[in-house]
Length: 256
View 1 (cartoon, rainbow, N blue to C red):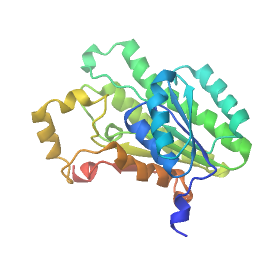
View 2: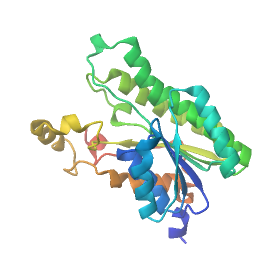
View 3: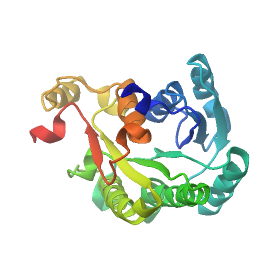
């Protein structure tokens, strides 16, 4: 009985920013749990490896070109999904952008690119997904990808931290508003994971050693470490969970 709660068979899930890294891993995890996957990226060709890996895992992935900074295209893409797949059951708001920059040098263009992707884009994807879920009458699950910077200040990452703090607030507000439609809105806050976006930091061995001392489990996260959490929050196993943010950080936040 308990294991069946994690079964996503018959569910349609959309993961934004699924061409690599954490987004790809989460999409694969959802597919392995039985979900029908729609994976998005600004570059359609970049999704081919994700599609192949999901296929090898026994799942099916449908690549979709989507730029979350283009609000009008979000509405169009989600409307097409409604028509083709009879509505959406799960959304993972993973698409994100970061660029380290001293705060005194942050330009308006950089601020808009980071917050436009991480917060504005996430909101309008959530809005479009919720309209689909209300229309189907089935409800659904929306999972936002927050960050340690949703909780702590990081120098040279002010636009990013601002966007991720806002995303946490958005998660809580939407969970309260959409609960009446049985749409659950939760989030995860990954800790230190080595991805293409963060690889520059991990090339510094001194930085690695300093950071490992701050992580109680003594290790950096692996992309696969997110799969269990994302399946839990997407499935009936978390049917009475909403408005929460699950830290997946090796104990980092608990120890500071």
